[in-house]
Amino acid sequence: MRIAAFLAILLTAVAAQAQQPGRENFRAATAADLARVCSAGVSGVDPNHQLAFCHGVLAGAYGYFDTTVPAADRFVCLPNPSPSRAKIADGFVAWLKARPQYERDGAIDALFRYAAEAFPCKR
Image 1 (tube, rainbow, N blue to C red):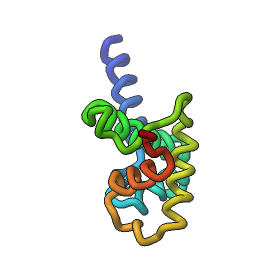
Image 2: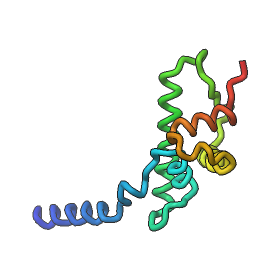
Image 3: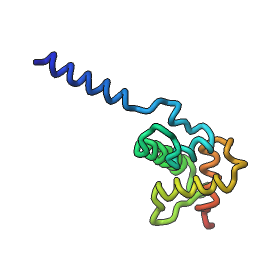
Image 4: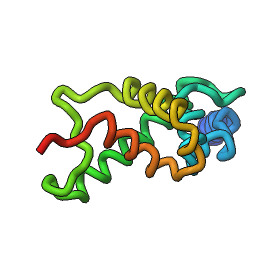
């Protein structure tokens, strides 16, 4: 019985691993990479996984910024209530489409360039 249970767990893990997209599908090195992922532009990948990755990048980048940059030094200030991650992702994609000169910039650099324009701090 223990062997059957172990085999069932092993087969489930193997099947789940086989369904995971490869690393090459979820690249976010450049702004263009991040925009492609955030706009559901990766073929052959479940859009839900793709958008979850995009939202994770957005939340992780902002979370790091929020915890490491003192409030007096911030150049991005989200309004209250904060916009949804989907709205921020859509805004970033549209922003980059209008500014193709930033496509080769680092993903996080471009994301914060967008955020500084969209959500500047009012001092």
